[in-house]
Length: 323
Image (cartoon, rainbow, N blue to C red; front, side, top):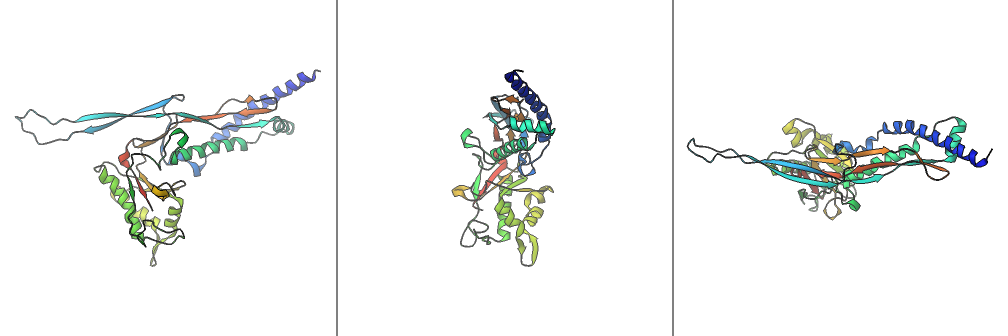
């Protein structure tokens, strides 16, 4: 038997084995969830655009005009109208996959065991980590902005009436520099600011806070005589909940500890609705067919395409820095 032919036959057998295994492995990995990196909880994920679209145009409309008193003999009837604007984002491709070498494949064949899913799971998690970061902070190499650093969003500074005239809620040692009442006021002022700033059209239903902040709020009681935490009190009595009867969503996320002006901590308040903000993801991560990369390696590429976060209604967004 020709040794070259035998080697080719072995390669073909290994290739067929990897292909058959990839179907099972990829199916398992697609079903795997990473709750700590679920960017779909933070923003509406829009996958409606064609997968290979170079960009996405969103048309924005708003109504103008108002009713007024009118005389039956008059001719100038007040008119309403709709103004149109458009927003355009570019879509970019990124990739992460996995692979096996001939030794790994040969041993799995010899022992009659399936190839492990660890590599595919690692690739899938790398994708979710990438998209989580794009969702929160964007990516400077592609000029993408995230939830925490949008341009055109009203940004305020927390009042400088804490201990020593500071704006922060606690110092680097974790010691309180503002009272629970002042912290609650700072939060409600942002929620109220969105409501009044949009002429009572918009209300924020979501707050994103640095992990250090949410940990502090969740561990600090309202007072020496009231063991309820500041976080619990806020969730129960914030202005959004009081006005709507709905639960305010508060999430701790990475990336906000230095997102504010002068690298201060930033709070993000927004209405988590698809007409306000969305994450463009025309092609969610997918594994492509197996191919042989050289004589000893089998590769499973993975690709995805995203346009990042787009804020459609900046009036429903607001930042508070210096907390």
